[in-house]
Image (cartoon, rainbow, N blue to C red; front, side, top):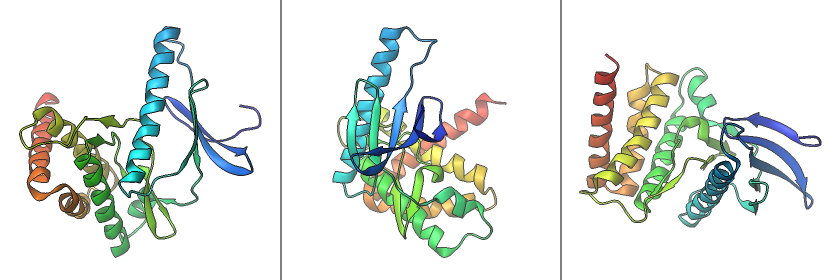
Length: 222
């Protein structure tokens, strides 16, 4: 990665800054995995790169602030996107007393996830670590695990409700890990925003499925 300013190394991708056409851009590059057959590895990395770019484009069309995509390179499995200088929401939650503005950010994050779910798009990893405060605006980032359901979820669509519930559970578990003392209050703010954009009935059904998932997990680990 000579000449690249690496800022993070993840399980499936490297994030680095690059000077590209006069801009400083953030590049997410999915690196080959030696434990997979080359053909399968190439297929998986290409599919995930395409899905992530599509999810970010869809989110912007819904009015959700996400980094702009400048280029998608399916030969090298890279996405070049807008580099945002901001503060991760997780930092605001874990630093001292939670301020009222942080509760507003959680409410906003919930609204954004409700918009995604209402459009049949699951984020995959909706945690405060994947929300970035730029100025006073909240951006959603890292759509690497995004999944398309194909249509708006319905109250009797068990598969879709299960997917929505997993997103909710990921958020609640992250809050429990970050601030066990305030996790329910923080999640309530998030869920209020979520319900307002998704609709109270469908949000309630997703919450019920989340509760089932959490009960099954507790039972399994005993």
